[in-house]
Length: 322
Image 1 (tube, rainbow, N blue to C red):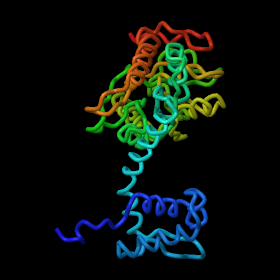
Image 2: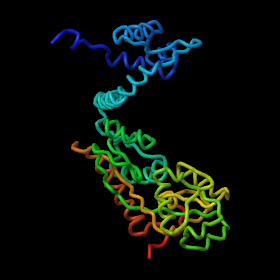
Image 3: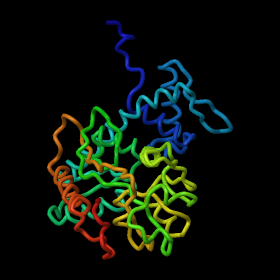
Image 4: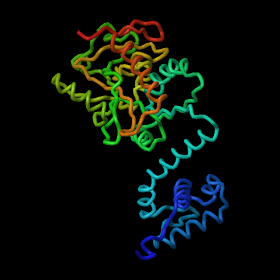
């Protein structure tokens, strides 16, 4: 085997430098983030360009613009950074004697409503555990769990990935929110027919949850066309409280939102939404990670499965399905 075939063209530290320069577009900003001198950053860029044999940055108006080659290189290196960051966290936990650390990744809605309630129960049984909660978009959440940056993930209707196991904690459903005093507030169940000529607030039809609502409308012979498209259900709740329309939210948001004047109603045809815990396939789940998921399952199935648990504001839970 020739020397050229085994020669290292770029190492992790150089990739970190390139990543920082891409983020800040200047060597000064990159140097501050990495704790290096500006000349050292400039030299790292030149060395990488010389070894690889391609230009990685164009210098435009005192800014460093990454070339297409640099974008391809760093896109492929991103999983490596995630693994490296996960190892760094584990090493820090070992150094500080904090073997009892639970790292959770959750989407925005679940970070606001579900995770705090479950942590309240979990920490009563595990008072010495340190918790790190990251609120992330779905793609970032999946990668955090895959790389080991998070011990467990919690998400609604996550896309399938071969490397991850989806532990279904409960099957919730889509709900409608009505502003206080709205004519629909007296109806326990709202249908697409009820929403004709009404302002609808909810996920875009092309979004994962929006597609489920759209399919339900089609089953009822109607068409889902929200007037106000919103990505996050907790934002939908705020807009409905402002009287801007009828909102579509998941059952957890409808049930556990605090201080809301709007009323929640079942939607028919039913739109099921699975709430899942996510762990890496073929990798043992940590004891604390499993304990957290068990608490989440019990909390959700008690509150949503049996419909016994009241909302935090004391109002009655929605009635069971017919």
